[in-house]
Length: 236
Image (cartoon, rainbow, N blue to C red):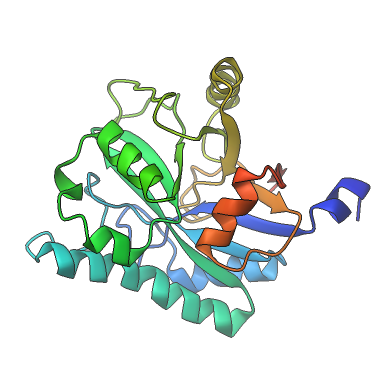
């Protein structure tokens, strides 16, 4: 183990989708959890697509409360697989608005249930609400242009940082995010955006390594806020 790795011994995937909760993913939660357990990761954050993205697999005809329960059930099931394979599993959120995505950590189910207006909020309104509730918000792959993204939107005043390393991005897209992040003094963040290693869009793995083991989602917010982490990349 290198000297830097010994200072940051706990490795986490922070941007992960499963076919259980996101229709765009190609590996089940069990398959994804086993994949990371086999690579000796400490843990993963399951960040299924949330409102604003058609890939979210909740019942759109259900009530707000029912949709919230269904959404968090995806990560709760993944946590059970984590117990089986010896991997810490946490819940994150990928919130979308017209092709622009936010990664959110520490926004709990009980808090969301108190805000039934969430599905109707604009991107900056949701980001503001999430941060006011104590969550961390990172703009995901901000420079990615694809068939789902016709306009690039940037929210430097409404987020904690940018995903400057995304395993499914091009080098150019990641470099541009890093430049933008430095210019605005935002936190740098990283994740694989893993929809399944058999999908063909994942170039490498990425995430964060921390100085202490994450206890829960709120503890993760504290670790990242305190800067007690570093970004890593890894070949698949």
